[in-house]
Amino acid sequence: MIEIQNVCKTYENGTRALRNVNIEIEDGEFVFIMGRSGSGKTTLFKLLMKEAELTSGKILVNDMDLQKMPRRYVPKYRRKLGVVFQDFRLLRDRNVFENVAFAQRVVGASTRSIRQSVPEMLKLVGLSSKYKSLPQQLSGGEQQRVAIARALINRPEVLLADEPTGNLDHENAIEIMKLLEQINRLGTTVVVITHSQEIVSKMGKRVIKLEKGQVVSDSRAEEQADS
Ligand code: ADP
Ligand code: ADP
Image (cartoon, rainbow, N blue to C red; front, side):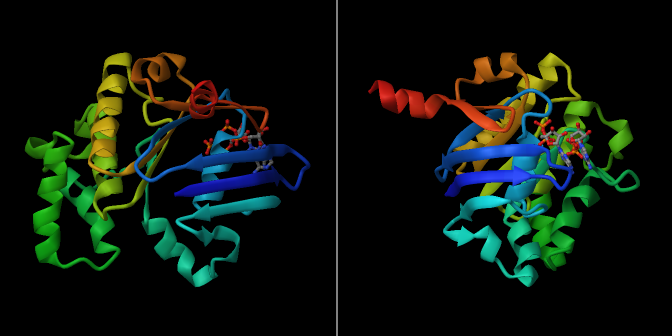
């Protein structure tokens, strides 16, 4: 469970990127964080990944207070999060198999385990036949599938995706969203940043809207208020 409590983030130059943000995300949820450019979405992500420090408030991830987390534990914590970016961030000189395997090698997985789990993951994302391709030989949608396989290979509890469809055409964007939905059904909590109203409307999931660093609406809170 992710608990964001009264979180404020003010950058050194005085920019107030987040103002009193309160969000609770349960295990197994699928949540969109929506907002225009500059609304604070990336800042929120960086706080969740412990790449930036909050100014006030509290973030708990599975009851761990991120501010109190010892520095030496941070790399281990980050590996519990699968992360996907708009620009895929694949290794250009490695093939699909190696891009996914790499994430396992850095955590010291055995060759045997890599040989078993990489093909499984490539099957899940629909890329079994392309395991030898280099990133530049793939379409944008396929590259994002590789990035998703890499994010999931170490079985994170939470998948964070920052504008995962920002570089894709509509058709590919929908395919990627369907894949994220499938991953969510298999048990992973999925948090997706987007500014696409179209995608959010199509998916029918919980939507949290940020404006100028504040939560201005949360579809789940509204449902609870209605019932
Ligand atoms: P989004 O991801 O929604 O586009 P950001 O979280 O990147 O929004 O930015 C929120 C606000 O904080 C913006 O006004 C942005 O210019 C500012 N900002 C982001 N990063 C920094 C930084 N490192 N230093 C100062 N201001 C920043
Ligand atoms: P990205 O969303 O690609 O990760 P950043 O988070 O670095 O990019 O930046 C997001 C927004 O914050 C951009 O609009 C950028 O101009 C602004 N920003 C980043 N760093 C600073 C900074 N040091 N001072 C002011 N604005 C910043």
